[in-house]
Length: 58
Image (cartoon, rainbow, N blue to C red; front, side, top):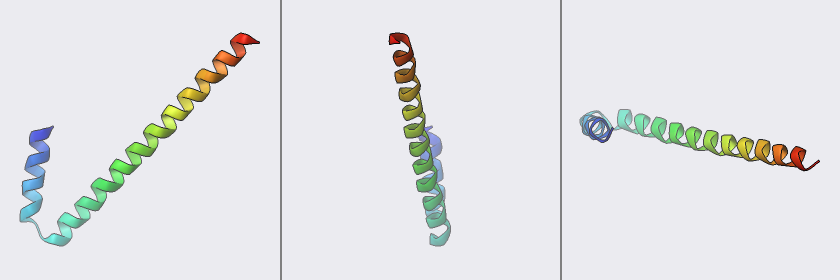
């Protein structure tokens, strides 16, 4: 993983600035989307867990 990342970074440096900027924006957007998905997934997990605990006590 680290090797591929390093290679792509070196590769980006040799490309025009606009291209590397686009790649950077895409990378940031993808990271943000992953982060949001993780948060929503965790929230859903907590909600279902709380719901299951609630039905157990009833």
